[in-house]
Amino acid sequence: MSVISDVIAKVKEKDSSQPEFIQAVTEVMTTLEPTVEKHPEFVKANIYERIVEPDRAIIFRVPWEDDKGVVHVNRGFRVQFNNAIGPYKGGLRFHPSVNLGVIKFLGFEQIFKNSLTTLPMGGGKGGSDFDPKGKSDREVMRFCYAFMRELFRHIGADVDVPAGDIGVGGREIGFMYGYYKKIRNEHTGVLTGKGLEYGGSLIRPEATGYGTVYFAAEMLATRNLDFKGKRVIVSGSGNVSQYAVEKVNHLGGKAITLSDSNGTIVDEEGIDAKKLAYVMELKNVKRGRIKEYADKYKVPYYEGLSVWQVIKEKGLKHDIALPCATQNEINKELAEAMVKNGCMCVSEGANMPSDLDAIKVYQSNNVLYGPAKAANAGGVATSGLEMSQNSLRLSWTREEVDQRLHNIMKNIHKSCLDAAEAYGKKGDYLTGANIAGFIKVAKAMLAYGIV
Image (cartoon, rainbow, N blue to C red; front, side):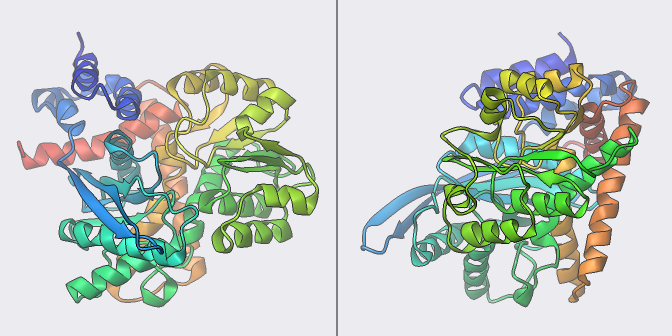
């Protein structure tokens, strides 16, 4: 049994109840096979086995009271996975699906994503099985306070810097930072995604969506193509999806879909700036459902179907796909339907939205495939830029941050291609992203000895 196979087998044995984590480890470790022969020092120091074990996993009780005075109890998590190259960095997710396996998969992915940005950030992730949907602002506030009452003792500007993720936007970050500041009596860059008024960065809300599109544009350029005139499929309708649509419009493409957990809309005329402004109001302020878009603009709405199921069942033609909703939204069958309906480029805005079989479909059909840890790294990259601004006690202009983001995505794209070619997998973005991210972290771990 090879070193890599042995590591995967041990993870499957020890973490058999964590399918998402096993999937993430399998995807990364399989692509690291070419590094084993070139780096015997990693094998000798057992880096491969050490990197799949988090430094620590913290689980805690979160009791809170709703508007009727009823006490609820949720479970909170923070997995501090690897800080070899910098403080732990990764978002907080509030969603009923959150469990230890999901947080471990996200934290593991974050190690390599953060490494790819070239910024000094380690990998971590956290969250709760709390569902903010349907809750009042006051209920969300009370939950965030209760969550931070425990989390505060495990984080710090030079220790662990959380951000937002699914279910955690500007409202939640504001409540958590306000409570942290109160109980610690300090104003530091301990959270990112903050409001501009209290230390946030311009372009941070847009960064993940913009970065996903920037990465897609870099991939398209390798075939002398661009977004102009292209039909673009976008899943989800949250922060990442919204700004992905905005950047697609800027680059001359036409985004024709959005979705949420209830269903999917298809707008053949394209989701232009005016319609997108409506979506932002609907989702960010009114916290409504995407069906309301269909009612307002008289476009088809497919109840209970994901974007990818609509492609399969309705034969929805498209050129580019930007999965921006959640993990494992695309399987082999849906990926085959995408290829059949013209998809030539996939750039992942969500974390691990394509399962292993779907990825094989992309690669075997010569589809440009930007894996999440590379394609959606713009969000955490700009979080890193927010950390830098907080440390410097200054704010950069919108143009400066956007230019830095664009350059980071260009560099990530180049790093992926360079690493893939150096290790005998030319043009393989998945292998390139994993190896490029891994090598930097592995060398840092090696330098520290056995810790």
